[in-house]
Length: 88
Image (tube, rainbow, N blue to C red; front, side, top):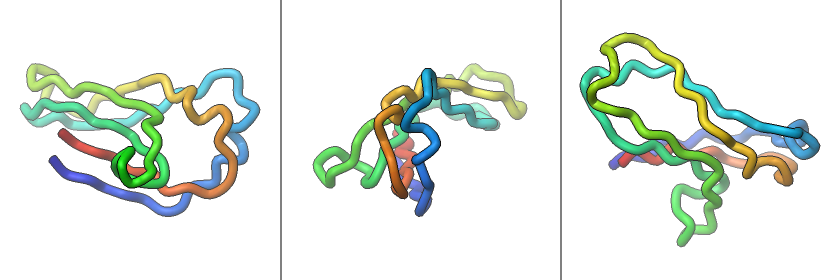
């Protein structure tokens, strides 16, 4: 797998949200796998917190599509945090 990390995002505006959803525009290109979004570190062993995940199917169309997933784990998160995409 691979890991892509982005620093830093301000999550002060998600703290009082009723529902939080993550969306991404992707082009599967015939590749499938799981994508996990982690906060602060790419693994729980390193202190990261899983906030969302989604599956990319290898049978998805070879065009840009939008994938949405629940990210309510961000409801009580405040301040600046790194966001990691873990591809498996």
